[in-house]
Image (cartoon, rainbow, N blue to C red; front, side, top):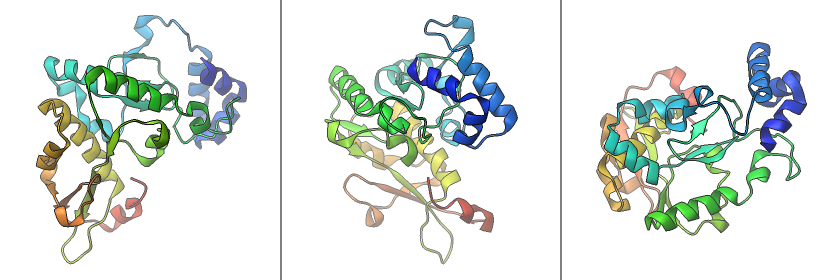
Length: 239
């Protein structure tokens, strides 16, 4: 795989600088890229939906979805990946670390956005054609959805926004909470087999409620009242 080969070339020091990680993590990930195989041993892979960690996947909580929900997800849910581009939930994935925002140089350019170009959008179009979908609900971060080329995408994009409101304060996006809420929204769609974007407005997981006064046509805002600790404000952008 091209990206694994390029990651191997820059070595542990290059990976450390590229992703701003420790020496230990850089060495681990170089080892992973060096052992990366086009046809890996099944025992060395995991289904994508169970392989990722982080707040968004905590919100999704895929391990607790029943078999019918997971089967529906396989046809309708897609996972963005810096290394793989676009994954179905049960695509076999080897362990790696390569954030979508990484400026890894390839023949296509100076970043993974350059590398993926329109390919992710084209793959999403193909999936939509198979399922008869006309709407893409974007539960990804700005970093990852930046790899989707809007001009090549033949779908309406709906991007839910999650905000917190402390008493006497303006509503704010708090990254930690927003990430978990995006995962919870993906779960809500899967569990309820949603095909109509209007049904998204019924989302109420974690105490969120649709806020029509704050919303735009394709950017519904969901609001909840919270007590915000000052340290949370450090993560109030970049969700």
